[in-house]
Amino acid sequence: MKQYANIPIDIEINGHVLKDILDYSSDEIFVLDGEKRIVYVNRVCEKHYGLKPQEVIGKYNTELLERGLWKPSIVPLVFKEKKPVTMRQKTYIGAELLTTAVPVLNDNNEIELIVTTSQELQTFMSMKNEKEKPTASVEEFPNIITNSAKMKELLKVCEKIARFDSTILIQGESGTGKSVLAGYIHEISNRKDETFLKINCAALPEDLLESELFGYVEGSFTGAKKKGKIGLIEAANKGTLFLDEIGEMPLSLQAKLLQVLQDKQFIPIGGHQTKTVDIRIIAATNRDLEEMVKQGQFREDLFYRLNIIDLHIPSLRERREDIIPLAYNFLHKINKKYNMNKLISQECLDLFNQYSWPGNIRQLENLMERLIVTSDSIIQIQDLPEIIVDKVTAQIRAELPTHLDDAIDEIKRSFVRKSYTKHRSTRKVAKDLNISQTRAVKLINEYCHDLI
Image (cartoon, rainbow, N blue to C red; front, side, top):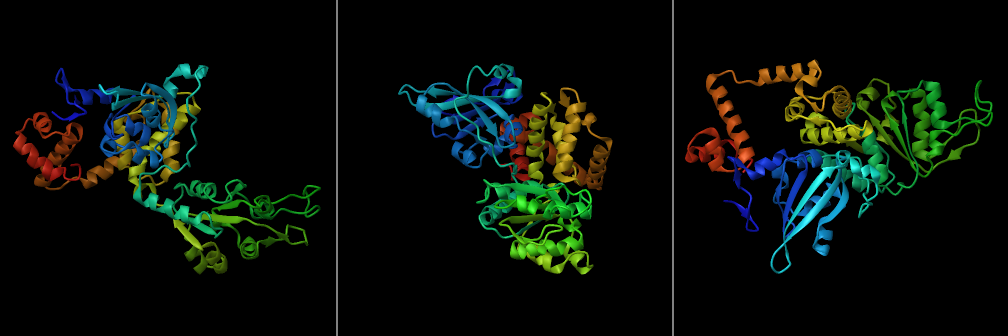
């Protein structure tokens, strides 16, 4: 029987293992040993942090804290007080928790275990009263949610370049979060205390886009304000200007923007006096600017001036490990927005992992809002749009084996992996699949080597 700190965790109750029973708890349950290492966590951790239990168990509390999975940490306070402690926490995917940590002391008054339980504040209605103040404040995290190696590498690059004023071009498919990344760069830059302004170059006609960017002086055109208007370029002085959909900017305005990039100077519409600004420009596009340059639709000199630092955001289908954390993030955010407490079924999450997400993160967010406002208490497969279910079904059918032996092998693989993921024991897998333990060991080694 596997034990931690002399306390068995594989106790069976009516044929069910205790740790499996705890997975049905609506509250998150963490158990840490005296070295602050996580020895158990139930399945709710995936809802709060987007990580499966096997990705958490064995890690030290400081490792996960350094990754920013939650703030603040309750563990140091428990070690200091050596008595139960309660505080509010916020996870990096947006869950707000009321966490209680209880120390288990040995005969020498030393901490042997810490048992923490966390409940979402949305289900803890008495918190609305606010009579009990939290013991620690909660800081907002940068709105970048990722478990993806590609995205983590991209964020490392952002951290390196943020303190410099070099122009940045962010490229990626529509809906991948280019504006979020631009805001993140601003927030970790030396300009973070100054203005961050955004304009969508595709959202305005040419004449309005020019006046919004460069402003105008009094009497410039019919309908102009008497005192003129300051443009976004001037309003962003000392800060950051984000030009979204830069590929949609008319050629006539591209020359004026080039002057701003090269000389930090511009002339308002109808004016004669040159103005100087100190701004950083971040541009973004989902179009192929190099191809546009070849076709004469985008200035070559502006392209190279924008492309000093080129960042590419991967699509959601290239970072599938982020689908579930993002889905839960939107679930928490939209539940809070509408004062609801909807849940989502595992079957829906499994389907999310198989879908291609052509609209990327924006599509996922819009879908989650639709599901939350139209579903019952738990979002089920039948709540999903037919087009999504049909596409996933067609994809699964296309990937099915065409030979009998391959099909049988795939079924065996699925059964063994599912059983081992749940039980983590060759003895229990053998019992679950009604096979000998020797055969269970052989099948686990064959099909689950990446899980061991």
